[in-house]
Image 1 (cartoon, rainbow, N blue to C red):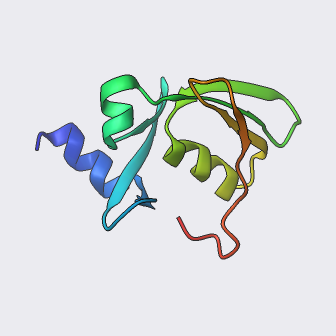
Image 2: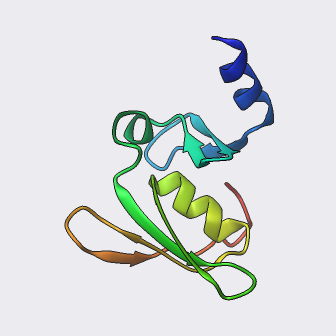
Amino acid sequence: MNEKELWRKLLGTKMKSFVGAGEYTLFLTDEGYTCNCMDFRIRQGSYKIRFCDEKEEWHYIDGCKHIAQHLANIGMKKVHKKTTYGSLIKVEPFENGES
């Protein structure tokens, strides 16, 4: 693990895996969010994510399901992820705020 990866692991946001044991680390950089899940590492995520910020301005990013869920959990509004097949899926925050 290089120094950059170590800092991301220490300072990043932890997100539990949706399909099994383990967790992933999300990190916000000047270029946007990154995630150390396989989907993001290989394809930079397989979703087109859209959401509104507190000013009701729309944002569009590429990412993985962990990034979409994190955005919903931190209070971004109208979070949706669009699959590679074109399906638009609304992402709701976890009720207990759990990542």
